[in-house]
Length: 106
Image (spheres, rainbow, N blue to C red):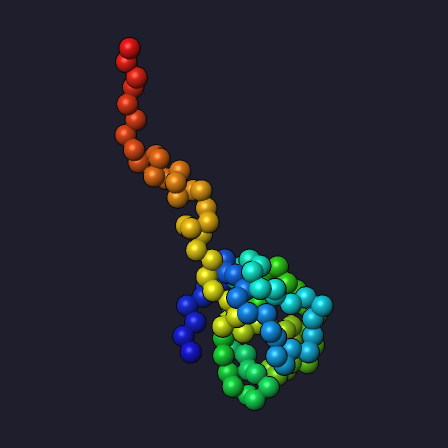
């Protein structure tokens, strides 16, 4: 169980079948982007522990969970890192700035 996520990281939901989650009008949806607000060790309905995420974009009221009365978190395995370099034009802007500029002469 290795979780390489960090608080503030951009992620994308890759699995949205939320087994055992009781709460929620607000649940992550497959393909949507989120930002990690907090990470803690949660437990599923069998008592197996795993890293659990709170997301900036989703705030649910506290309720009874497998870890006590708290906001429902989400299993880290349902997300993958959002590779901003593949989705951001800033990568190309950075390359452009590295190219030496020549003055035009007539």
